[in-house]
Image (cartoon, rainbow, N blue to C red; front, top):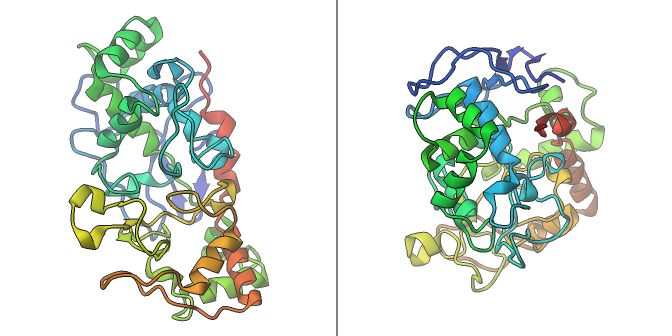
Length: 351
């Protein structure tokens, strides 16, 4: 399967990038077996993808980043890759059906593993926002003792002893040694290509009136209404505002969230708004994975949650009927991009 397909109003992927990285690597068409790297372009009506000046897209970095993403040698025990927690069939969210992900040894993550889809449009990363770029985000799981438990020198040593990676790094960056900066830039390049935009909702927005069921259409109207208020934070088309909110999960925050980074009392218990796209491909909801179904999520919002300090979103009892909740779930299910999920086998590299 080739991802460079023409959909809706135009081509969503450019076959060849001519920007160049300024790093001496190859900038023309590069392939890796069946994988044909393509530079994503924002779908019509979406925000622009802003590639960092110091890390513009090149096909060679895309190819390298994909290999690194699925590379278990980046973990201490050499059996955990980025894809271990971010499974392609689960929209690059947790793959194992557990509330938290398992790292090396007996380590577990402290928060639910979020999807990587559409992070090309994000400006902050992690539920607590502690990273401002995808490049910076990559260091977190690589170095965390409960995840991949590695150090920069160890990663560089392993990759530098592998002839495949020697070739791929030279292809991506030209001369010079393998460095962690180059590792994280390649990973971020690949992750920015993971764009999900072909759900039934998107087809409906593009003019296919039959793409949504009557229930989903009612749910979409309710989603945008003042009664439900979902779109206040889950803003289409990304279905996130990129902000941080306390939604009344606890009377006293168990996890400080953004407050653990800023130290400000008003930020305690605030977490980044997750996207609602591809929710049916994931198994747990909220930063701590406390809810195991969309019905439980809606029950929380309908009840209103615990009272929160000034500045928090208007979390209040909604008074939704059971039928209205069913319609909202139908709409949320229509945000699942089956085409995105079905490309999963295409993402796995062959050595």
